[in-house]
Each structure stands twice: as structure tokens, then as C-alpha cells.
Length: 438
Ligand SMILES: Nc1nc2c(ncn2[C@@H]2O[C@H](COP(=O)(O)OP(=O)(O)O)[C@@H](O)[C@H]2O)c(=O)[nH]1
Ligand SMILES: [Mg+2]
Image (cartoon, rainbow, N blue to C red):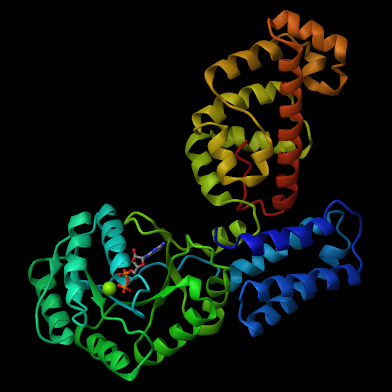
């Protein structure tokens, strides 16, 4: 998985900082040296890594962190914010032309994934209600036109083809799009093995001929800093508006994703995460930062949660969690909501902190949990720490379960409570963005 090694290294740096008292300046310095090493090992551009660490260090030795009672969490928060800023802060959306068609030219080296991405983008736009046309302007390889036709067929989007030179085919495709009222034209172009003048000339001419709204460089994330250098070279030949990083499903170390914006000033707009035509993601810097830091895709989880949860109830729950008043009664209520969200397994998949909590929210577990909690006294429900072994035996008897079931429930509850507390602490001061879904 991409970024795994970087994420693990950062986590081990943070682990040394969390769960302890005040941080000294040398603690911070030490941690930042390790963060810098981790970034360089992930193939992040040298200058970018240096500037990143300088920025984070400056904020970390500020009063806000040094005097905080949870300095480790503050450091993670700052790193998270700066990683997000490094990758462009917000999602760079695809522009649309004020007068259709919107023309999107794809360029890049051979094998980068242009043709595959053309199909993915066409599919995504079509699903979003647009009416795209693909244009086969890679006339360098005999099989290239055929390949795009196959891809177009798979996503049910027509492919414009022609013979002659790529520039006139692109021009004709634009006319076709205008006449037949396609709102978007996606132009697939030829690649080369290396950046060379002929290729650059061709891209320049195609762009002049079709006046594109978007010129996206498609680059292989696995090539790390090479991808960044290629983007730089292409931006001299064509009015690049953004970058697509492909093969992010491979074990890329992450350098391309982290350095691209800072070095080239071009935002990453999409990532391609597999060979199948639905394996495309809109690039969100904040989500990527959280993924790198091993916090899971919290925004995705929240979006999912928000569809399911009553907002007010979630806020009430969040307040309770903050005051650590989360009780077994609340737990019982959560079980039903977790079930609505697709079960605990799915949540744990998005939010790795919850992986330790082994809990299936299938009907029988929920029924058993309910039975056990109903057999507890109100005091036991509010202060589970008083539940000793004789109480456990009584509860098991009363609920028709085993003592081991009671033990498991109390353990799960404690783990969940602890984990949730950790998460709220990390994100607690970032209220606007983070709402506890539980
Ligand atoms: N694993 C993986 N393979 C990809 C991805 N995108 C493209 N490929 C593969 O990379 C190869 C080259 O892709 P293609 O679209 O023909 O590249 P082009 O020469 O730039 O048009 C093909 O075998 C694709 O299946 C991706 O995101 N992940
Ligand atoms: Mg191709």
C-alpha cells in the first residue's frame, strides 16, 4: 500500500511524543529530525522536506504546543495541517468551460496510464450526468486507437477517431463535440519514452488547436521525483492545469504526491488506484494527509456517518465523550447506529484506530449485548469499573449468557471508550471539521 512506510515512521515518531507530559525544545527538535528523515526516505523532494520541517518546527516550539497538556497530539495536528497545505489544502476541482464543450487534454509519457485514465474520467463524468466524447489522438502506435475504442466501449462512451496527424484529429473531434452537443471532450494523446522535443511540440500544437479548459499531466506515482520533474518539463510546453497520479495502488513511497504541488505549483486533481475503470479517486489533500498519518479517511467516515446519524444526537454524544461520561447505556444505543452504518468491520476499515475493537454488530450480538446491559443495575451501567467477578456472574445468569460474554462486552466497551477518547483528543480542538460520529 502506498505511503505505508512513511505512515509507520511518522507514527513511531509521534508515539514517542504522546502520552507524556510537557515537551522540551530538544524533544521537538529530535522528533523533527526524524520526520525529515522519514520524508526523504519517502522520496520527497529535498527542499520540500526541509521547508516542511522548518514550518512545522516553528509552530511546534510555539507556546500553543509547549504549554499544552497533550503536546504529542498537538504535534500530530500541526503535521496533519501542514501536510494538507503542502498538497494544496483543498481539492482542486475540474474546471468546466463557460461555453461547451469543456476540452480536457491528457498528456504524459508512454505507459503512464493516459488511455486508462481517459476511460476512467469518461466513466466518472458520465456517472455525474455529463455527456463526454473521447478523442483518439495517439496515432504514434497502431494499437493505441484500438485500445481507446475498447476502453470507450467498456464505459459506454463514444470514441472519435481519424487518420492523419494528431492535431487535425483533435480539431475534428472538437468540431464533432460541438455539432453533436457533447459537453466534454477528453483528448488522449501519444506518449514518448522520454521527454523530447517532438512530443512537446505535438502537445503544444494540440493545445493551440483545441483551446483546452484543462490540460492534465498523467504521471506514474511509482517514479517518485521523476514524476515531479516530468510535470515540470511538460508545464513548459503546455498550459498544464493539473496532475493525475496513477498507480497509487502500488507501493509508491509517496514522494510524488507530497512534492508535486510545492515543486510544480500544479495541483493533483485525481489519483488512479488500479487497472479497473472504476479505480479513480478525486484527490483531497486533507484526506490524503490523514491517510498518511494512519488516521484513516476520517472525512469519508464522517460523510458516511452524517448520512446515518442524527446530527444532534452525535453532538450530544460528542459532549459526553469529552467529559468521559460515555456509559454502557450509550454504548447500547450506539450498537444500533453502528449496524446502520454497515457494521463495525466497515468503520474499522476506514478508521484504523478502531481495529483493536473486535465487535460484530450482527443481530445476535446486539441482542446479547442488550440482554447483558439490561441485567445491570443503573450504577453498573454508569460506572462499569465496579463490576467485579461476583457481579459478572450475576449479570451472566440474569441475561442467560456466559461470564465470558460479559467480560468480552466490558472489554470492548473499555477499548471503544479509550479509542474514542484518543480520537477526540487529537481532533478535539478542530471542531469545525471533526464531529464525532459516535
Ligand atoms: N496498477 C495500475 N495499473 C495501471 C493504472 N493505470 C494504468 N495502469 C496500467 O498501466 C499500463 C499502461 O496504461 P495506459 O493507459 O495504456 O498508458 P498510456 O501509455 O499512458 O496510455 C496498462 O497496463 C494499464 O492497465 C493504475 O492506476 N494502477
Ligand atoms: Mg495510451
